[in-house]
Image (cartoon, rainbow, N blue to C red; front, side):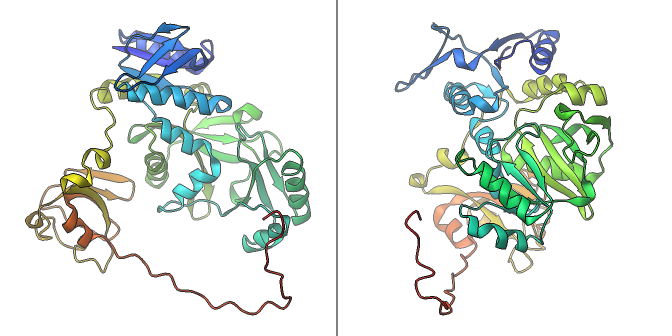
Length: 402
């Protein structure tokens, strides 16, 4: 098996460890600088060139794409995908995870705790937004920040306002305001997810009075055994992002884990040193298990023109399927197959006919489109709220820069 590692740093710890782990198992591994790749797009024949030479086929690709080259790096990875190469993390998932706001928007639809986050454009929206979050302190984050850079704790509303004015002023940087989880100040948990399980976890503690616990900023790390709730949250977050390999950062909130970030290119040095786990080997083992099963978008393959399609059916207490087995649901009699059941962070593939359907489950079903339309949950009607008269006529009119 031939494995490509997309990385600009062949001497970096994570890159070296992945190459060593692949070669230890008898595989050929090569580090490719994504910036040295050229993409050729042609009908039926997607090609990649490396240093002006046609790239020979690879069985798998491990992306180690830095944040500064996300756009071009994911374009190269996308070309590998078009060529049928198995990619440990898909290009789309990396793109989503790199955008902090977009990632949180995606995660917010699911049953996973995230800190209340505010993204504003106008200065006039800062104070009301902070008040809605319960007041200061709040965390100000750059959308493009990594390794704790661009993360600032504002102890007062005035400080938050000043920070945002500075960052979003002439520099035109996009910033988020986030509720501060005080009980986890100066520490967090990094859970390393490979496939559908947490293979290692460490607790990071900040140096001195710093509220940021990143090891790159002088923090320390120790191995930690995660309970089921924390493991479930980490795996669920990685699955939502579509990542097979992820570093999931969790805060220890008073009501359980609070998700901070899902990293699509997590470093190996800190967590391997702290835990002693051969994470690079776990990633190569994942490739061994998955390389024969390339990504297939079932929604695109099973087009509506064929009269069949796929749909996700959420189940609640009022659903006709709640409390019934798949057999008793009569779905098969309607020519509908239940492909998987998503139950919290657990995916039940090809469920048996005697499997009970519970409230909170999401059924992934394949069948005739006409039948599936009848099973789709009804859309909530949008009700128009009557606006109160503004005390100042014209106050609601947009300004010249709106």
